[in-house]
Image (cartoon, rainbow, N blue to C red; front, top):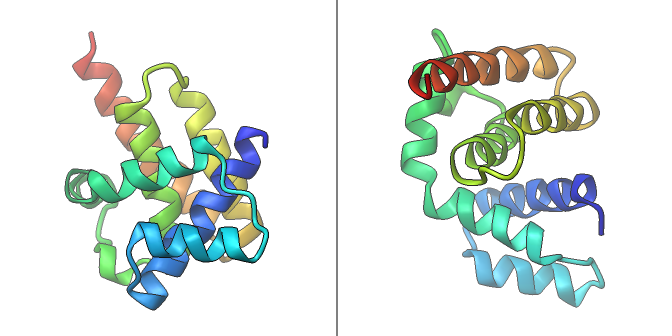
Length: 134
């Protein structure tokens, strides 16, 4: 499974978890039961987003001017969680790749404005991260 597909599957799993209230293990098991491939990279993204939800959501709050997590569309906030997990916890993945992949997911699955919103939030985070690393 290529990484783009793995990110899509991670988004589906996180979305399902929020809708059903199931934990990661149950949701991944349900996907596997219906024949949906869940790669190790997908599991890593999901578990990373879940395990680091609080600091990730804090980053979203700081970077999303005038938006709270609760007001964001469910898909948008989960796309952001995946990308921010990658930016902060997966140093082998370039920040630009994480942002690009998130924007592409938003174009396919989000609202007409999702890709611009996600690009803006992740751009703010990337700028802060870049300054902190200098």
